[in-house]
Length: 184
Picture 1 (cartoon, one colour):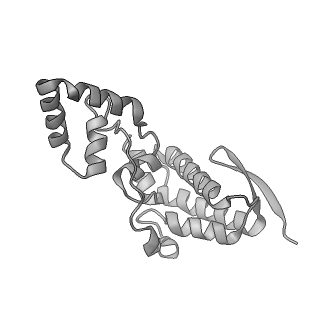
Picture 2 (cartoon, rainbow, N blue to C red):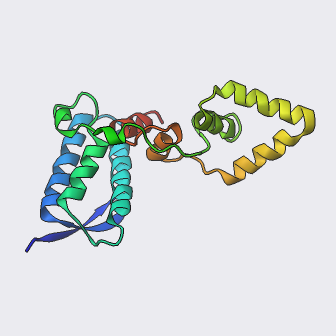
Picture 3 (spheres, rainbow, N blue to C red):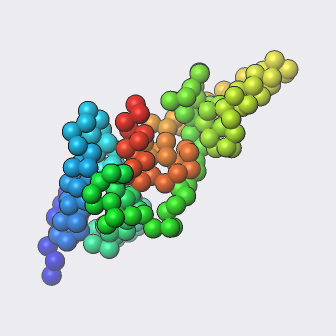
């Protein structure tokens, strides 16, 4: 018989067994120590907890309790930030090398709404080329305006660090989350 604990991670409640809780707590404490006392460390920790909560939701799929195997796989997937002393214990396996690429509007590199920047990340083109194509489409037949407007309405904006990683097609590891959170 195992002891279970009710915890809140990233604003969501989970039932987690004691071994998994101890492992996750040690990971979060070592991650926090690796970040140091920088001004954005609280934001990074919040983003990391939100990402962990998202991964727990995906992996639970009908199950009720988070176990140690699920916790270890998430820790392996997220990894540790560069320069941490325990980086060797939490290296990401090969299956997480390339993240899932999704289309988002990019708020960090936007001129109007971030549509062109989001398209450039999704199609792996230079943002200048995409902006010129939209300008030419606008001048020639005004289709550029309507297409831009549809993308603006339909595409969500990449707000969290995990969404910014997905927009670029890189894995939402702890180090990448730290990079995109501290760049705000």
